[in-house]
Image 1: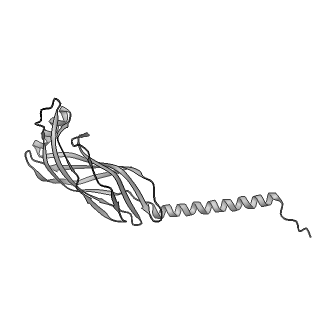
Image 2: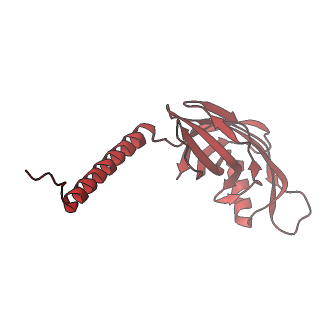
Length: 202
């Protein structure tokens, strides 16, 4: 009886088959882990707003400008049940008709455990905020009617930490559109008209 080993070609086929099976199993494992630990983006909700000043600037500047001072309260919720979320390099500003009407305000870095919620209250303001003549006129006109449409913008980066893994940093861009009831000359807490809508990209 021939006791010689299998020919080299047979050994090579067996090795290739074993490697293929290992790659398939690794791919299935990676897919299952991704589906189990796949994180969702944080949810942002505007809870309240206070406007202490939103008027034409009285400072002697050559360009058209407004003077602003306002504060927003925002809840940031981590909807993931298996992953913590880390937010960093956060910066926020307020815009009107796609034009910033406040300087940017930095926010602290945040770390949220799974299904956790953090509330932040950034303050915005400056005596001189250059704007276009059209924006100034429309803003003063809307304020006269008592309803002003504003957009709160938050930028930064986010990292997900599903145990035992950790993702890389990803940019985040948040737009919260809201209508506020603001009577000319009023100062302090303002009413949010309707439900503010916050969209998170990407």
